[in-house]
Length: 608
Ligand code: AGP
Image 1: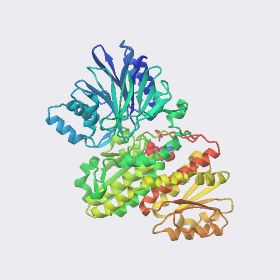
Image 2: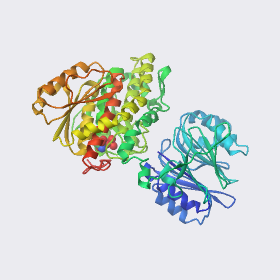
Image 3: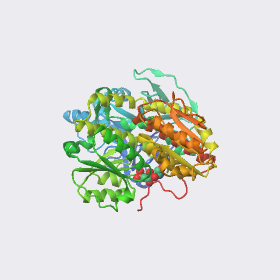
């Protein structure tokens, strides 16, 4: 996610902006920039790479200023480069933006017809020209009128380079807070609290769709009608480290809890549910080949492999195409025949996993087209693939992958529906029903978060078990694998994922009274079969933690029950996986593990 800072006060604005941006570095970025008054205009300084580069560039300019705006860019449109870095300018309008302008193409075309010329590949530059086209001297009105034409998410800070007397900000679906220190006359707008803690601990949490003006006179909040809103000041007593985690004790718990929002960020701009429409512009070049595809091969590692296992079931069900899933490091050893009738899908949160990157290169060498599903724009796998769909889950800091998994699963679902439509095997009515069910998932996730004390108490009950078995069937079978991986990689308790139908072919010999089994048995076509597996497990004296739908009658004598809201079977994985994430998190915390940086693990395995 990008980071925004806007400062107005009596201190050195360059220092205040750089300090604020450095406290946003944890969000991940690939370039940075500031705009600061310089004589009777504004200087814009932008650099690629780390903030050190921006600091070095600024150190050569002896600029003293009392206001300015700054930005760290997490690229979504347009590769990381100086020309794509923010701030962006049009005439005297200079702005920074966090978010996605979904309709930037149509706005850009309209502005070009009006004579505006573009120099960057970003959606943000559209905003600069749009505000300028509406600016008649009142920056608030120009910003308000401009964003009324925008579809998408944004947090914007804008200044007029000719006047340099105020910063006007607004937000929609993207965080923006206002730090206020009326005593010392210091004011700061920022993407989140950490960036402002050096200035103040008193904040206005700008309302969604709200506007504010920052000037030497302080902060004034407006509603879209331009009426002044009574300021509500919130005092924050977090320390800076806690603030980076938005008040959560760990990045992992923060990222687990972000999922109701990140799911929507992944979907943003891609669907019109009531019309059963799916837009995957990244796959435009694949449309003409969709009907000729003979099979799909999904290749990934770890958690990304598990989302791929779900993707297999989605594609086979909705696009009626055979799919195989392979571990990237094993794919490299195979003599698998490929051709241009085969699509290889490489899934990678980091886009830098060596095994998956090598698998991509091998697939291309053998003549297959490759589509990537990545979370990091401009990463190696994203760049080398023929097509790439970004998950837009925002930076995932914790080593244990959580929100990336659910976003990958959403992308795979959209891809399978899109492919089914392209292959004329899936109608808009069916797509519309699935998409509308999907829109209810964020609220259903919140119901799970409301029950997390129950999940926590169950997890703490079993933290001394020597081993765990996770079992499920069909769509939730990959969740058994993912639940086992989450538990073992952060709590160091041994765990295995198995499909419940395989129990009697060996693993059941393991079971005893000190061998807990987590069973995923939500409503669906295989619930009764999995309930039977629960009976088998209990007959061997093992404790069963049953994850079942809210209205289900549990099988007899389940030791522990975790209930999830009912949803269609294909979407239940988005709920059961969050139960798994929370279960593993609380077990690991019960054992005082470092959940964000588990021993022996790296966030991105860039070596084979
Ligand atoms: C997941 O929690 C692990 N951190 C690990 O298995 C990870 O999913 C795997 O290394 C793949 O990473 P990638 O998605 O960045 O390619």
